[in-house]
Amino acid sequence: MLQPENQPKKYQHLFTEIDTGKIKIPKFQRDFIWEKEQTAKLIDSIIKGYPIGTFILWKTREELRHYKDIGNIKLPETPKGDSIFYVLDGQQRITSLYAVKKGIILTRDNKEIDYKDISIDLSFDSETDDEIVLTKPPNNSRYISVYKLLNGSLTKLMKDFDEKELEKIEKYQKRLTGYDFPTIVISDYPMDIACDIFTRINTGGTELTLFEIMVAKTYDEEKNFDLLYEYEWLIDNKGVEKDLQDAGFETTPSSTVLQCISAYLSKSIRRNDILKLNKYDVIKGWKTVKQGIFHAVDYMRSQLRIPVSNLLPYYILLFPFTYFFIKNNGKEPTKIQNKLLIQYFWWASLTSRFSSSVDSKMATDLNRIDDILQEKTPSYRGEDEVDLENKEWQWFSTGDAFCKAILCIYAYFEPKSFSSSSIIKIDNSWLIRSNSKNYHHFFPRSYLRKKGFEDWKANSIFNITFVDEYLNKRTIGAKPPSRYMRQFSKENSEIKETMKTHLIDDLDRFGIWIDDYEKFIKNRYKRVVREINKRLEPKI
Image 1 (cartoon, rainbow, N blue to C red):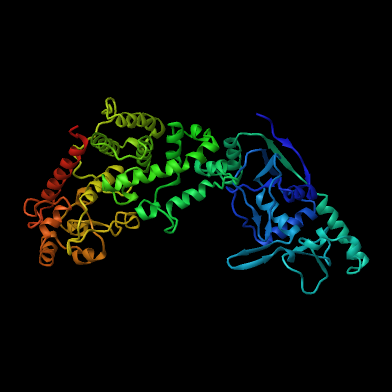
Image 2: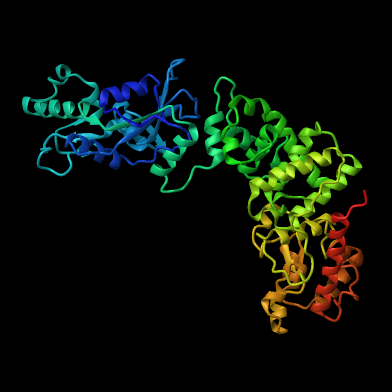
């Protein structure tokens, strides 16, 4: 790897390179957020000869997603065949100086900010006074705008200023245009290294995500490809075409989509392998991957009956199914393939499989998907086994994969409203926390506390049912089940069938009428385990 080079640049040289399209600001940089006060202080520091920090530029022929304009100024394209200098450190300073030189107008929070207003108070002495550069012209002093100072000639200025003022203007002009900006150039570094450098010096240790890096790497203006835009369009395109918002899977993270791409192109989701993906392979393969994602989501909604993405035990489960449908050319699975896919989903969901070592485990699992494609039963020997023993008091948490798997079992039966027997709408926004709208403790926790049950028992996942509105919660409150279920029995003539959709098969046998909580948990737990075992042990 080449060593960084010190290449000090004069003001004019630095901004000529911006004007000719050689210096670009990559899109993973922050937006220009400096206030005019900060810009004024920066110019004041330059005039006084103070150090203002080092600019770090990455010289490369890679084309990254970059800003095309700053305020009202459109930035030029880079000449074909030329190297580009991307700003890794110093974006706010460079943009501030460029904004003043060009007289840029920005609109922020519906307010117009005109950088032509930044002015130098000519009544002050730069050698003795603290600050001579102001954000707007002073009311009672002679001044010159920095824009005018940088873009006007002394000859043209002579008629507007006296000799003493012109001496100051000439001095300030020379100090600005003659300032040596410390600049370090790193040439031809690999993108991941350049991004690592950016992370270390810009974001206080907050690492650029792999998706952000790949967005930059795969950007192609000629082919009109922007991975970030494609991801956002996949999530929600406002009804123009099919999207994940309409399917209830809008919370699918960008990292999962990136894994789907990598699984298809390289059969690996390791960071290094993703970074090695060829830009044009990603662009060419995107349509195929996108269709594979839709097929996988449709399968999860129809066969597994998972209505929304927040119920998925792991988002990463989406990509082996995407891989299956891509390799299966989008065809529906055969009867055997279907049973094996269901078995795989529940085995992976209930074993906490993806709580660690995800990359290596998924590499193994893609081989299992290859077996399923050939209608061969995958081997799970030597792997974690599903343990359903003594889980009656499993603490309910919306972030726990086991709990989410149980919720998927509940959702499979399309649970109905206690009061009206209408199918409950399950919504991603109602599933975030354990006290969200869609969740209800069948034996209310406040009731159980009064009866002496500790919270570790009251908050069992097997005490959870789905509801679709606050009606049931308001009606139920802290009442015992025997009381509120009698009320719902009067309103809903189909109450017995309704409760079966919640895997509560018999109100008597489940101890509802006598408010026997432990009997309820025991029976519902057994009922759920029976459903799980059907899925884990399919008859091929």
